[in-house]
Amino acid sequence: MTIDRPDAIERLLRETGPAWPQDIRAAGDRVKAVYLPLLMAAPSDGYVVIRDLPYGAHPRQVLDVYRPHGARRAPVVMFVHGGAFVRGSKDINAAMYGNVLAWFARQGCVGINVEYRLAPEAAHPEGARDVGMACEWVARHAAEHGGDADTVCLVGHSAGGTHAASYACDPALGFMGRHLRCLVLVSARLRADTLPENPNAAGVRAYFGDDMTTYAHQSPMAHAHRLELPTFIVHAQYENPLLDVYATEFAWRMAKARRIAPRHLSLAGHNHVSVMAHFNSGEQLLGEQILDFFEAASR
Image (cartoon, rainbow, N blue to C red):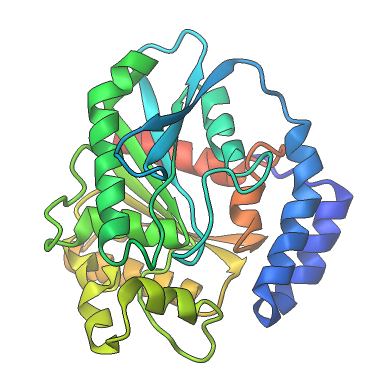
């Protein structure tokens, strides 16, 4: 395991963490800004990027492939970004979220960076359906890019984690995680709510609708007991309000149903943004944990 943070990042994480819930947008912008120069300076050799390959007809139904040189039947890591259901993209700046797939490509995995449609244009369950379409694309085309379509790990962050979890466990959608070897949910919104402490309540309403009586059965939380894929649940120490609570509850529900607890990690020192921003920055603990989990699930 490797933890190596420059002093400026260490200071920012330490200062920002306890105050994170007070203004997550401003704090998130500071975190992205301090990581950007480090990510821009990260090694970019050893892989090529093929951008904006369509997996559907909508302009946002595109993905990028990060292919290691010489890849042949390499494991595949798919990543689905967040954005409170109403914003975000696979490239929110010059380095994120490509940094995530670049890091995995440097470890020998084929990386897939997935864009998807946003609410309110694409309300529940269209995010999960876009993930399903992207997974179908990977199943058909992974081999063309040196990947093994039978060894796919899906990683979802924040709202992207919601869509990934719904794809994996909501029986109403009919996917139940097909084409996947395992699932990683990072700082995912696993329960829909519009509580006063939720700074992204408007985004939840835009995606899940105004009828809050439907939220319980539409949330991945309602279906955690059905999730049979090997699953790794991650949250940051300093999270958007309640996401850490929901992550822990989701893990508990899985453990209760399966009598086997899923892997569950609280990433010390990190917040909701840095939990993904740190990939390819020199700090490798979470990446190494995910690779270890992926290898165990692939045996």
